[in-house]
Image 1 (cartoon, helix red, strand yellow):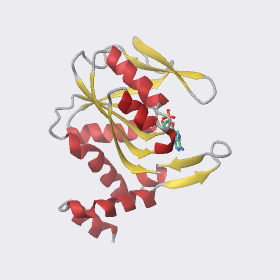
Image 2 (tube, protein in one colour):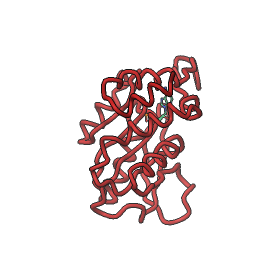
Image 3 (cartoon, rainbow, N blue to C red):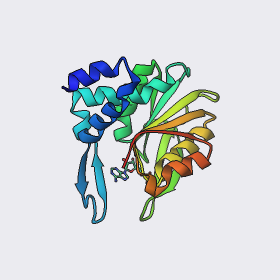
Length: 192
Ligand code: AMP
């Protein structure tokens, strides 16, 4: 059944809604994780499903085939899984943005706020060259704090941030609007 939909999906845009439904059903929602009131959108169930994973990577990539993307930049940790596959699909390089202290060579660093307190993320100084076209990838955008900080790092390095791509947008939390206000195009496959 899923195979049929997947096969059709490669030949028709009319089944976009079918694809979206496959992805929506492949995502597991855990109530009150990691704390009361949060609906955690768990994509491990999507990643383990071959058809859903393939639809995800193809859908995240398809708009950018002709965009001459130099690097796909993934945010630790789920952005690595998705970003690596998108980079492969687009024939681009992959660059990780990591939590502070994890990268071995010289880094650029940015602090960003979380709900409680602040955190820092880093990228290797030589990971992108000035003028390169990059695509930012993560699994989900909520308040947009993480993606906005990643964009700052990339812009500091002189990259041209083409867009930020997510599987899931939580529009009520305003992150996509925040990124768009900073001049970044935002693409998400699903909204919850
Ligand atoms: P934010 O910086 O608020 O946009 O949060 C985005 C980051 O936090 C992403 O890396 C997500 O993986 C994670 N995140 C935030 N809210 C959720 C949620 N409800 N379910 C799963 N992951 C989340």
